Length: 195
Image (cartoon, rainbow, N blue to C red; front, side, top):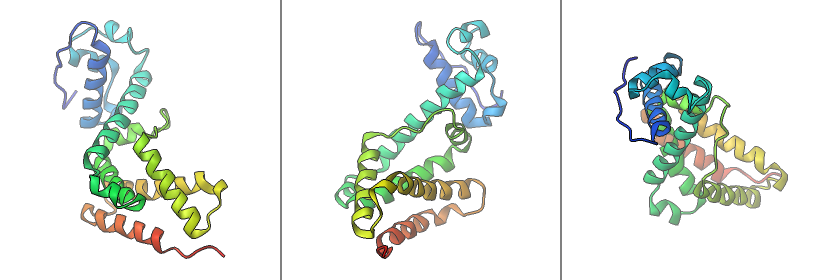
């Protein structure tokens, strides 16, 4: 398997070592080129040892997906400044969106596994707070009904996710991402109230 290196592990940490190696392997070559046997070999254990922790490749990929969301969360937190919180929900959304897209573009194979439908994307507390504030703002200012909150959240997420997908697919130059996110935020701010 290309792009992998053997990782030492301590007794009791085999599950963690397998997940770390699987994430690195997926990131390097894509999930279709990763097997549980190859991950076990890269870690330096027998396939049977790996099967004690993961029943099959699908179970391992679920763990990879969950780890990917944890890494995405940490990445966004590292790139969302204190100033973005002070600027309100829309500024926080702008910073979070830029970080989200950067992570996706830098880790396209991992991103594909994360959004294959096996693991539901979590809502970290800071994201939840940002969404609640943003949705409340949109409902108050632009007349969206409370019962449309989930749909509105989905539309916002689809917009950011869509920008990431376009860059990954080569249909948008990465240099346009900040301007695209600014444009999205501007559209949200300037949308006229529903009649």
